Amino acid sequence: MSDKKSNKIIMILLIILLVIAVGIAAFFGYSYYSKLKAKNQPQKVVESTVSVDDIIVNLADEDTRVYLKTKISLGYTKKGAENDINAVMPQIRDKINSYLRTKKSSDFQKDGLNKIRDELLKQINDVLGDPVVTHVYFYDIIIQ
Image (tube, rainbow, N blue to C red):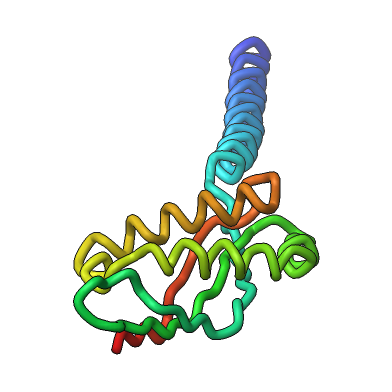
């Protein structure tokens, strides 16, 4: 009788130990999975902007005088880049003015504006020496 009783106690203890082991394994597995999942999620990148003063230029249209008035903002994500951008703002404005003077009013139609953005982005980053500026944003484009 004592053998049956001791077998039952051993069996109960084994079941309890098995339940505890499964619980511990589940806890550590869940913890590892949550950390791994958090690592693989992309971090939000906060983009800041620096405004360039109003730009007013004559466009290169041959038939008539056409003016462009626009406001541009430069987007960046690097910390401390605003100081770098503002330090060379006169050179950036010169690049923007020089480039826009070569464009015709038809260049601002449809996908032309995206090409202008891309080229300005390249030229501005050339002035900065590093790819600091990530986006060129136009707002208030007036062609007259």
